[in-house]
Image 1: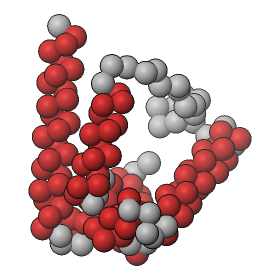
Image 2: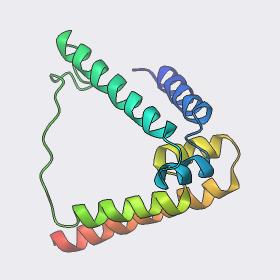
Image 3: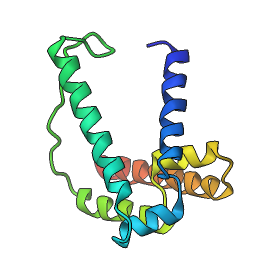
Length: 136
């Protein structure tokens, strides 16, 4: 896939996130407080579209970008997965964003997104350092 098409898909994705209110702290807060359920519909729709698209790509035998057959591999449980998942959820609830919506917020000009993205990058860097230390 060429870079221009990838950029256009990313812009479209960010636009959809913005228009669906997925970049709004209030909408995220209301979702986690179970007072507004529209973002559950947005997430469910995204899962349905991805599942349908993946099914179609496999049915049509479209290869992965490296030419290999398209496949999803099962992920194994590893130490830290549950704790990391909980930390991700807490960070999402506190900041009102996840990595995808943080980039969309940045595109909207949100100053808070800079802090969230910095935290995401620092967390990923720290996790990489801890993993490297454990494997040696």
